[in-house]
Structure formats: C-alpha cells, structure tokens
Amino acid sequence: MSTTPETIQPAELKSLLPSGCRLIDVREPVEHAEEHIVGARLIPLGKLEERAGDIDRSTPVVVMCRSGKRGAEAMEKLQAMGIADVRNLEGGILAWKGEGHPVGKSRGGAMPLMQQVQLTIGLGVLTGAILALTVHPNWVFLCAFFGAGLTMAGSTGWCGLAILMSKMPWNRVAGQTCSASGNCSL
Image (cartoon, rainbow, N blue to C red):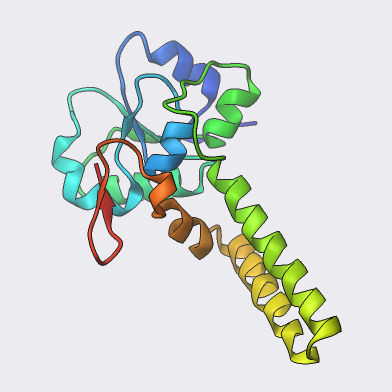
C-alpha cells in the first residue's frame, strides 16, 4: 500500500506518536468508546468546525476514523481552515488493528455500533419478508427500504441508521449530552 503526502500508514504513525503529533479521532463518541488509538482526542466530524480552535497546531495533526473516508473529509476541512500539516490515517483504525497495533477501550455495555446497525437491518428485512408472506404483499417494501439504505451506505459511506443509532440513549458515553434536536456533544 502506498502513502500519498496526505495520508500516513499505521506503522509510520506508530513511530511518529512518541516524537509528537496530535491524533484526532473524528468518529462518533460511541465508536471511540468501543475502541480507539490510545492518546487520540475525540472531535466528531460534525463538530470539527466549531472545535478546530482546540487543535494544537504546533505539531503535525493526524486524523483518523474507522476506515479512512471520514478522516479524508476531516483532513480537507482542516486544510480549508488553515491547518496545513494534517494527514489522514490510511485505512483508519481497521488498518491500525490489522497491523497488530494496540487499541484502548472505554467501556463495555452496549454492543458495537455496526453490530447494532446490522441487527436492526436484519430484523427489518426479516420482519418485512414474514409480513409480506403472511399478511399483505406490500410489506415487501419494508425489505426494499432497508435494501435501498444499504445500497446508499455502501456507495457513499454515509449511513443514516448508524448516525441515528449513535444518538440513542444506550449509546451515550459518560459526559455526553444531547439536545432535543438530537445533536450530541461531550
């Protein structure tokens, strides 16, 4: 795997951490609590603009997410805000773990967010299929709804159900508050 000037490989990041860099995790609080690179500071992608002033610009900045897509978006936002020395962790925490580097965990409790999403979609499709066979054929549209959602998530990297699930009460992290509009912050 090659590295572009805007990305950093997990092994390179591991060697850079002791000498000093600012590692920013742009995932949601529940994802960060499930597992994170020790020392990473949580600033969710949706809060990046308002919290950019909290980022120390005296050292290189590395952004990371689950697989690299949100990290790339965060890097572009930070560069647009004038933070020039910023790179994205190539492959995100998945690549970090894939190379055997350690991760920290903040809590037990709720199952991982992506497992919750998979369970919800699976139950929705199963329910729609059973109802279409036993109650009325139009219930097949419930299956189509979940299929369309999966297609959108797979093609864009944006999953509305994951965002919604991350704001559920059982996925709140200690110190996190959510407004009536559903916006959550630490």
